Image (tube, rainbow, N blue to C red; front, side, top):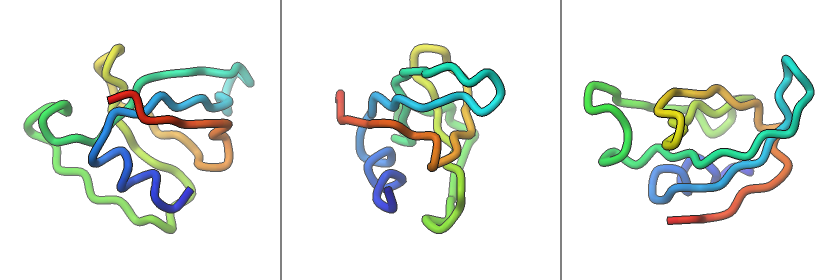
Length: 77
């Protein structure tokens, strides 16, 4: 799970996670690629943090995902 931030920086991932507020399983395309996130954002994250902030490309919004809630992820782009 430590390399998920690096993977998000280089790719778009399909991340499946459990919502901490609703308990639902959610799948979303997420990224941190500079050419896919809004231009005025510069995201620096600690690999030791419990959560990862990522940009959901289909919804065009940011999501803070607890790493322990991630069920699966794979590269889609």
